[in-house]
Length: 465
Image (tube, rainbow, N blue to C red; front, top):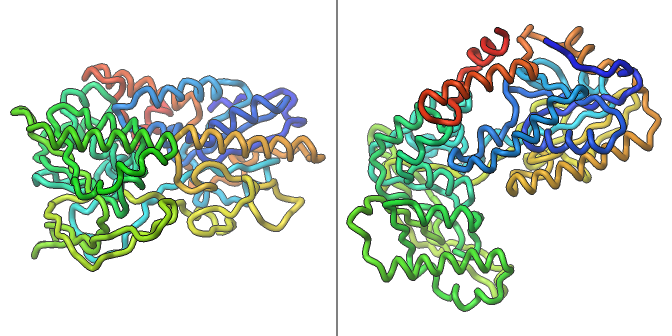
């Protein structure tokens, strides 16, 4: 492994970034730009970088992944180091990191999904959307996910962009997906899918959807797929459109137009799939057969009460509706994990003030910071993450520049020499470029941008070759 360091590194502040996703790379970019000299070590749990850009962005959205080019330019600089296959809380502790750096920034994101905590949630074919996304995007954690697509009706619980990503992958023509970097195992399974009706279930109304107009526009344009709305869900919506903020107004107008079109037009003969958003419904329990297989969802019907639109409350009416389906995806958000006992956690977040982690001060340990979903919660798109990462990096710069620091700390050299347990092989940037090259070559064989390696063992084998 080649370590690229300044010859005068003893006089240079060392910053450790834990997490090689967009928050980590954006923060590192700002630190590198604003500080006259700095050594930045990016530590990542997986052998490969880019986090949610690699494993969260839908395969049919390659333009969103272009930011990888920017991250790559940064990582190729002499004072930036990537060290993959290192897990905080397993291979080293937070305090150990803080002893050898001048600042430690945590950006490891939100890697677990929120649960509904309702009856039969553990039934077969009730799947976390996060796991399904990881499965078709090649995340090693989800490579063996079992997805039964043999039924004709499925439901997605939640109405955010991730929910629409799942819907689009399930309903898009297979010939279009073949051109993307979707994993081959997912492609084969989707080619055999019998899903014909897909429900998108929301607790509140059309004015409260969390998806954005771009994702909805793509969804309603899918070939050979009709979008069918419930007219009753939109009672009174047209009356308030003019009072909405512009982004919400445009999104609502698109839904109303799609509703109007669906009421006028008869499905074309070649339409054989149906996308069905429904509102004012909350999952009450999953229904299963004798073999514990999902056969439906009991939905509680809701209504909105209150005078002001922004203050409306969603309450159950007492009515129940049964949605028959053999597959359900839970898409109600992600949560972060407390990987080290030294972290102050509350409501799934590291407690912080503008990125500074709130804790008792210690002169012996580096200051601790947090950016991205670990500090803000899993909200917003990559652009939102970028803004937050830049703000936190600005705070780190201010702290490093105004304080008299001891810049003689050993950084990763000391970490690797004295602390790393388990003797796990560490994958550096050179190792990642070997993996990258291999994936692109494998993809070319099938006319795809890349074929991702889903085995950590194989990643390491290629990186170390």
